[in-house]
Picture 1 (cartoon, helix red, strand yellow):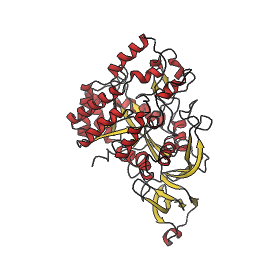
Picture 2 (cartoon, rainbow, N blue to C red):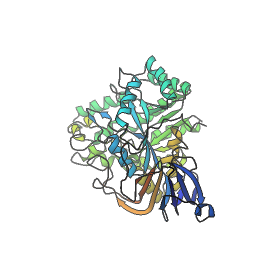
Picture 3 (cartoon, rainbow, N blue to C red):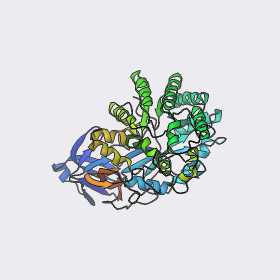
Picture 4 (spheres, helix red, strand yellow):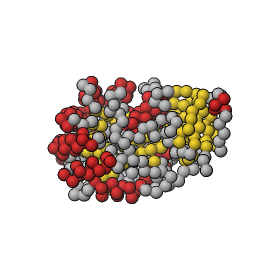
Length: 467
């Protein structure tokens, strides 16, 4: 039994085009587009017709950086794959790429299997995995080849968190050399964790224990230094590099310089760095702990350089680094010692709306919105054009978006499993109305109609952004 849906009357926006077109969906995929009102479009018949008049018809968002159920600092991220992917759907995101974790002393396979077990049968939308490599040795390097073959084509390393995820320069170089051979992409958390730990120790010894000191010890220069070092190591290895959650203007400058030299170096930033700042970290009564994440929030003047980087394509992707911890009982673990605050913010539900607000405010164009939130993450991580666009043959991951609806972001109305909103009280224009995942309606005119288990694991090809 084939099932057909027609979306009529909307403005279809992709990374490359804007056109008034009707969209025909058949058996979970985009079957055709035709200019509205033409005989071709008029001839389509379907079981379901969605009226998108006055609305945008956009590809479902691809959030290439989430951490559902991540163990961190003696606790776990508060969103499960079930609650987190449902919240993502509410926010117009139809694919996430989460991070499976290799623990030191264990194999990549064990870590990947553990994350498959967490996610399988629980996701409302489609998902893939990156692999966090915490223990580089001969066996790990061999496993990287096998993972690339089966569709886990990106590997994250950390220059931060000594004793937990940290890799030294030699381990990083080895992994980069391997990825240069097998086509994998190294993703780097670029902060000088060894130096930061010294500054943390010194701050605590001075009695500087409040959340705002988290931002002060994780200095922008140490993000820039690590970014520079990662670029040079990748250059030595002949490997591409993707730097995650870039927050500092000095780090953007390092990426821009490398890209000007023609190096295959890419950068991601996140909404929190574009819309929040150290002012939030300094909020009184330990409220600042809600905004503790790494890389940290920066002073407001960094925001302009991040927006500029997105416009000049020195930054290519906006992901969320969604890693929520409740204020009560989780963030509070760091009362009296900022270094014990679990690092992470909720945001998987807010990204598409915040970036549309950036369109409203003139920071980026509509097509650039779709490019940085849908198309480029899909290309960067080997899922395009199955994901990230509206074109014949693509998965029917489609969002009907009302560009004129106004909303106020709040913990009272969000669907993430966390007891605060990082954007509490923020007024934005634009809102998700209806969401289709592989042709199935998961949000229907602001009502959740999806279910756990609809989302399927999506193996990925290697980075498509290198040509």
